[in-house]
Length: 427
Image (cartoon, rainbow, N blue to C red):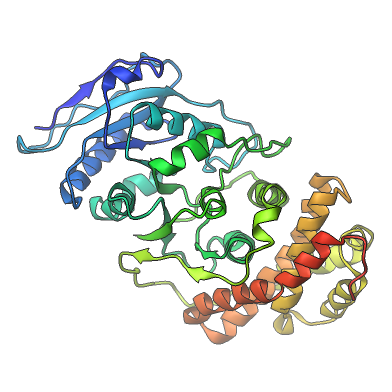
């Protein structure tokens, strides 16, 4: 039977735990019925690693002396089963109104400092989606996440999820193609919450201060951009299907602000770096992609098109503060199309995102209003994407997103010129 040593150590006392090979951190409280299966998966994954290692499991707690419930295992593990020790660290306070599954940059900094104290070779962050830990994260997938960094080959291992055609559309339409264009790495889930980092990343994360706003509150550590801007090695691990996390009660404009706003801030912080990047290259992928079993029902786009049309009528003055006249003219043409014919060209959408990133930097309008103005345009892109998938079939969805990402890259000179000379008119 595996022995889990209850170490009763605070963060300040954690050096008594002693050096370790791997720190595994779960940046969210787990109920006892989820904690024991999670630890069992970790134990099983340790046996599958290419080389044996010692593990410390970092769990959050309001009081560092508290022993988390549910650590006793009842399995029949052999005596050779590796042991997992645990240590608590203080959990950062949650922020009302923030999407619950978003990572917290302050928590990541705390974990990175703990990993440095423990002299760990690598650190695994298992995200905040307890449903994924319970249902989808297997020992084999966990091994795919851990091995590349613990072996010293890569500094950051990002997750690659088998998402459905209409899942994670903010990521597919903005986050992935924008980070790919800016930093040159084809990391398909730059905001993934199951990640593995090597010791080279610890000082980078521990020292990284994410600029806050009233909406972000220090959330969203962009690990992929941190690694890329420091020329560290990045890869991806196939972690299989992940059900969309719930954002119930969150307005779409608020979700866009919480997901996209920090990336726009990141653009400002790293402008000197990404302006030198041209093109992109693959980030190596470990594991096998899952086969999609998605249904082929068509999507009704009428409500999305109606939202776009309402925005085109009511937000013209706001859009004129952000978008050049040629873009406004293209949007006017789109408003005359029927729902079944609605098509927003990739070039138009990429330039819209670039112009909103610039407006975010220049503060042309209040940032809360900025994302409210982006919302009907985003719904217009979703409607256009859905019309194409309805016509071409679900199998074309991945190729469709890749085409969009290539367009972001080809339109990057537009971003560069607008960023460097924002007052110059570009027809």
